[in-house]
Image 1 (cartoon, rainbow, N blue to C red):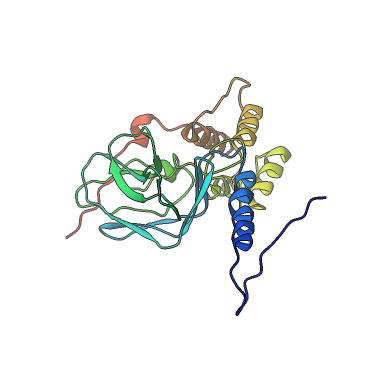
Image 2 (spheres, rainbow, N blue to C red; image 1 turned 90 degrees about the vertical axis):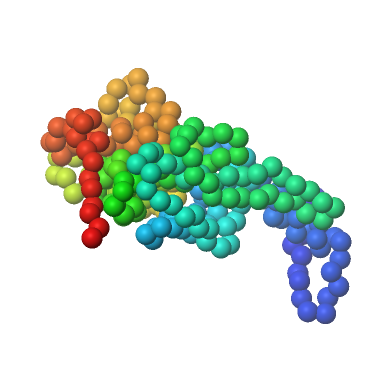
Length: 258
């Protein structure tokens, strides 16, 4: 017979070894099975905002190497214009142990390298020009992939069953814009309505299946950016718009500060 033990912590009760063992089982073993098969990425929270010179990572939970990490306090990183592509990453240092605890330090770092090395997770990327202010709010779905002076979070991994995926904010933005169009099919409407009815990330395989159904069977979509571009293409075609040229997408927008 299997018995589950949940310790009760009350005033005047002795703290026993068995209570701590039960608590350890409930927390660490539970999370190990809860997120089995998930890709690394953000689980909840971790919103990014910016002041004139500081990027703020809000409180939240991340999954890294199949272990959740709780950010109980906001983290901050000072930034400045460089006119070069800059990637904000969360760096997970190697674990350290003592007889009582396992430690793992985390730090916000900036890099010009878009690939992730060991222990790194992308939080955003941007190219900030002199005299411009970093935007973290968006006009529409396609504005999320603006290159200059805009916080791009398309590449940021979100934890989901089957692998890392796009943020729910991005897929909800796609769904909301699609549902405003009169030319979409019932299949599109059902897919988008389901997206709006959930607050967790949509798995990468579900996105690939939708994109293959709407496009070509050969679509693979291995990266977040490929998934995003596939959704953007569907949205443009549904709206009757022509795909903008790459030169138009990369147009620089300058803001002069007096």
